[in-house]
Image (cartoon, rainbow over all chains, first blue to last red; front, side):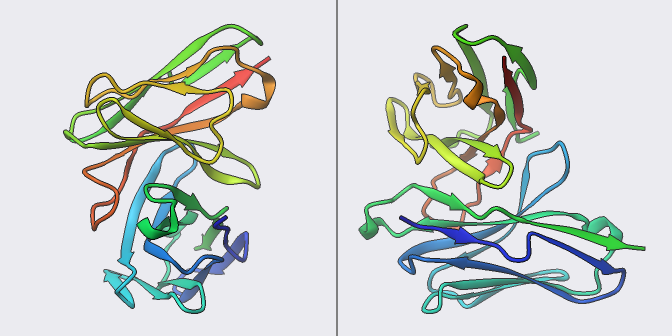
Length: 116
Length: 114
């Protein structure tokens, strides 16, 4: 069964700092991996989606990387801002051949606080 | 505006009283899914649907039912709610899951079962 872990569970950094969030998964037979942001009391907003054949994706100050062989993904946030404060979640979709097609497994998230 | 809506947003009920949480999307998406989110456990998939009349279990389907009679709607039914179903529930939709298309999430329904 796929397990997805995010460490640390919480992170506090001063404004302007570059930071890295980590996501680990146990089954490397994934189809894609997605990073989401969740603000308190709200739903999830997609940030980046990486296909299994890709190594990284970039959007503005965000860069997500994927290393399938080691079961790891990182989300890099450059020049952090107080508005980046939120919980960040990663989610993996298993490959069809794994028998878990269409099943999505989420990590437990990293709660980020950017201090002005 | 493209969106996923859920109703109600907040619900307090008692054990055993049947309830339905509605989910609707206006993007003509084929794939829809229900998740529950609990502290320390993250989001866990309850049920998903690949299209009308096609549904399948996720990781935690016990105590829940779903139906997909129309493409836009995917209600979650709790026939006999129990306190361990107290949680934050999210509905999501996607054009199709296995591709570059992301999932769009509803705002969530916070359920308390007494």
